[in-house]
Image 1 (tube, rainbow, N blue to C red):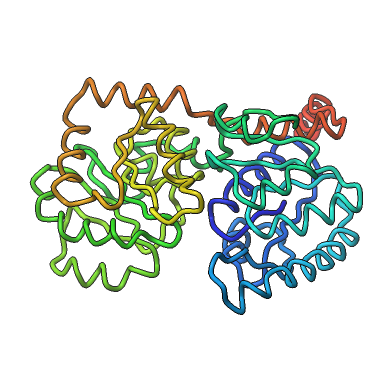
Image 2 (cartoon, one colour; image 1 turned 90 degrees about the vertical axis):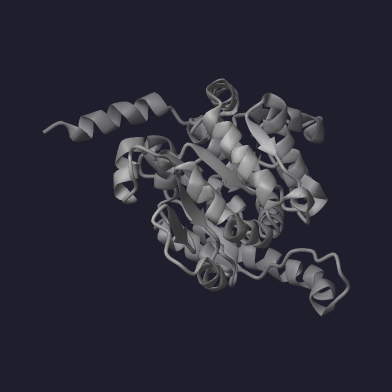
Amino acid sequence: MVGGGTGGHVYPAIAIAEAIQDKILDSQILFIGSEGGIEEKIVAEARFSLATIKARGMLRKISYKAISSPFLAVVGFFDSLRVLKIFNPDIIVATGGFVSLPVVIAAFYLKVPVILHEGNAIPGLSTRICKWFASCITIAFESQRKYFRWRKVYCIGGPVRREITKAIKGIAIQNMGLRQNQKIVLVLGGSQGARSLNKIMIDVLPDLAKLNIQIIHVCGERDYSWVKEGVKAEQTFYHLFPYMHNIWDGLAACDLVVSRAGATVISEIIARQLPSILIPFPFSAEKHQDLNANILKEAGASVVIKDDDLNKALLLREIDRILNDRELYAGMRAAAATLGKPDAAYEFVNIIANLLGIDLYAYKRRKRARKQP
């Protein structure tokens, strides 16, 4: 499994790895990530093995790091060759990010088949290069097919971790110490936080208190200290977290999500069939978060607010409107349900099995036999 740089590349890989463990007995899984990358922490928490290579994203601004990136990619290629020769994999699963490129090229050199997954509405630079070395490609939405012409493409949806779909609302509310008789809004800024959204949340809190709702605000570790200081007086309806390891409880408990528009969070939102207010990150590469958000907006599952247009009056009005208009709320949930594919990770495993000639039914028979006394 290879993918890194952001949680948006790592979490789908973890979802697929968990599904592999569920469906293919005796599977051995190794993650490859970049030295010092966010994947070192996330993969360890998921209890998978990780090997690291030297890799760095291509920077747009001229600097020492930008100039040295291509040379680092060459080093990463030889690091990848070393890791792959030792582990000797049957297949490579790449979920994007700069760390994927040297590994995929090394896999092609060693004649190891590669399955590439792209969750964003528009593929990044790494994915555009990697697609030429892949045996097949999986995508989250049909609109992505145009970027992968002449390749074997499967539209499976965005893989999400099994806890996301299995979490139960009532139990999640209890786990988080929330009240059952009030609507709950989950505010997410991504793994790094969202500065503009965090600032608005501080300003709008007194007005949100009047709506008789509860707020779960995951502000990101970078912004946690000043957000906590900005809130000042403790609010019983407001729950602030720097990071939420049990994000499945937050998603299961809530009635509405306010978030950036990364591929992973969008997959999780629609897998839970939740209405959303999306504020795309304005500096995302090639505006891919805007394109992600527009897919949900056009389906009627989300309200999209541009970062430049975000203010407390607008955010308050949209939260109030969605939660209190039953017809609108039901329509947004139904639209999210049409987009969501909660079994995407298992569909991915079926593709792996077909590519490698694995009979999953035989594995199921063996699994049942093992359980017998």
